[in-house]
Length: 458
Image 1 (cartoon, rainbow, N blue to C red):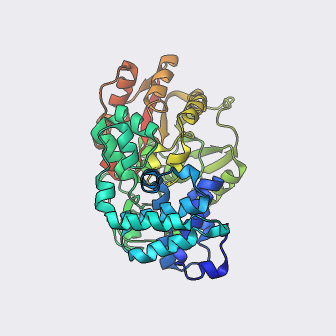
Image 2 (spheres, rainbow, N blue to C red; image 1 turned 90 degrees about the horizontal axis):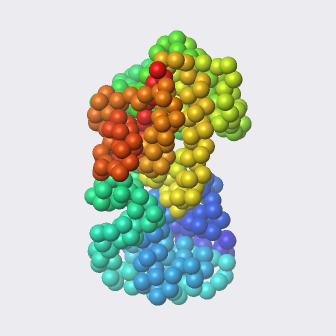
Image 3 (cartoon, rainbow, N blue to C red; image 1 turned 180 degrees about the vertical axis):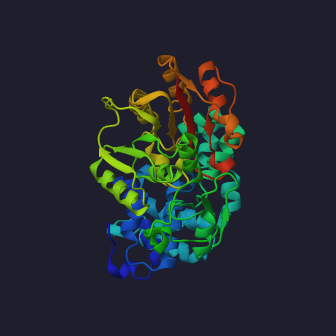
């Protein structure tokens, strides 16, 4: 996959890196973040930042680019070699969406990158990208419409099934806005570790500008570029990077000092350590994680964040908890992640309806096991980072049908800023859940998309 040194030495390092990431994602099935981490080793800060923007942007916009490639080249990307497709996707993204570098430089580098492996096709890259520069972003992108889910999928670069799902779930206007938002950089938010200090104290120590969130007192929204994980403050446990939507989950559970809490599917530990902070370091939290490697990382996070009341157990969350009873239970199962497409560039191309159907079985089993471990009068929160009624409202409605000893709390009244807003549903049970649960939406709340339902055992 590597080109010769002579061919690549004059190519901008950020473009060469992004090209390799694209090829690893679409040809080898690599995750974009892991591929980028591996490929940016040795780059300076400026090149690393540009490579990140190019790679993530080109991956996100691949649906739109592929539509334009077929229109401009007269053949679908599936009939082109990998280096050629990666060069076209990368070149079109930079020409049409960034428009910062000279067009000739973008085209020249794309042509050279297409020669990776010594195969042909670079002439096609040159012709397509030069035509794109002549026609311009205004015409090529301006002609794309989004009156239907199929058109919106192309214009906003999403799989058509996601466009159709959100069209029905949220209505056309919100679906369009949500898909458009998915292609913008995600918000960076830090959660101050209140076991060590509050948000005001953290803000004073940070080297970047931040602003407070009026609804979540421990949240700081970062307004400048910031390497959170490279900060000494992160190492000492003063904060963790966490979306405001994820913070709402622990706040919805509302654990009290002295409580016993069960956290199922707990890794990587952002919510676990938040629960410990809300409990002021008093009580006990059993954090269950099936993957031993992720469990060890969770233990390290708990130590870094001074969450001494957390005990980590390597176990299957789908297995019933024998003779255990907890005051509060958090069920945060694996999900399709459709609320995190801003931050996870390649996820939209990995997710599928079939995978969602398979996940729902495990989600229900984990929820059922969590419910069994809850004491009478106890509180359970079910949360996902997805915008998918099958994994959210319908699943909770089915659970309530099968568990008459549980009732659904009205979180929408408690937190009206995050109440769900969706068209009327044919399924009245799901509609009833919608009226009481929370759903954060990236285009409305400028954070990740999370579903949160709170259940109480009678």
